[in-house]
Length: 382
Image 1 (spheres, rainbow, N blue to C red):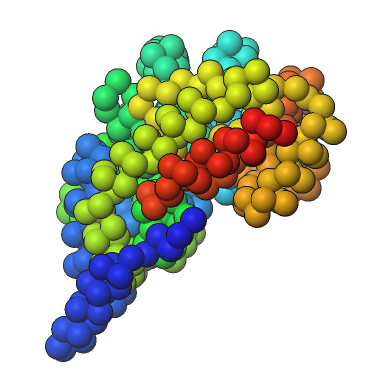
Image 2 (cartoon, rainbow, N blue to C red):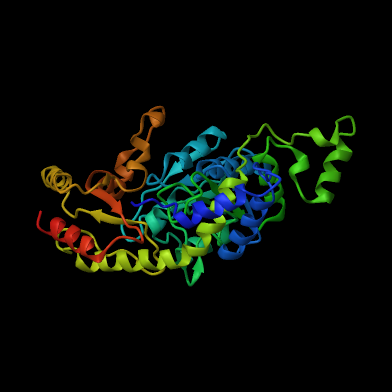
């Protein structure tokens, strides 16, 4: 990965910092501007900029607890740790469901078996730029009145039926970490079309303060119930300080201008990579419709440890950086923080194959096709 922050981004930030008097640098007008433009780009009503994608996950799960109480939440074993952590830290019960190879998202047949009367939400991860949505999943959510939460931290610009993922769910979370499709250095955003949830996200981002809400009717309802409190210091919930800064927003506004063009290059790169990969050795039958990958996905068909070790040895000798296990290092249920949970690994056969016999390798706009050719040649000749 080359530096995801460009000279243009830095120059725009310098120009902003040169303004006299010195502009407000904490959460302010530029954050609001970014939220508006991000919402327009994604196709949603509301966005709340925060200091990381992990914080976006945390606020979303706190919002669910505030509105619906602690509940069962369907989660994937292939995701980043903060998804599962946010579920656990808010007292929800994570229900793990195996994945499928075509989009590395839920096996819908297995998911249906795991539904309980207390299932309130499905927390779906769009893995490494692949779309995880299907009509069957969306119909299931509508039929069962289950909230869909989309983790789009790795998939900015991925689409389902020509509509961006992250615009389908009750809420969606994005990350603007250094290596992702676009960066604000560190940063994230919660998106929703639900007006009340938006108000809660604004409040919970800033210690749970009611004054951060923009709905005057909602604020009045609360203040009327707490007349003995200073209306500027009413806290709806024990929440967090997850605010972003004007500096992050300025960089984000600059990055957003190039996001679509950069994404198109990433799409072409991944299509080219898959077309060159040896289909007898590696799984290539991904659902490519709408993909917007920021990493090349490599899954060895043969579950053979010697072959896996040879692939890794060969990549390392050729100075090609890789991560085993795909998103998040593989199967989250095997991690130390999950040791108190009784997880039957026989129910996660696809996940466990991906955990041990897959990798991802960086895909970025500056990557030359010659390097992709070289990468495929090295993999195919192992």
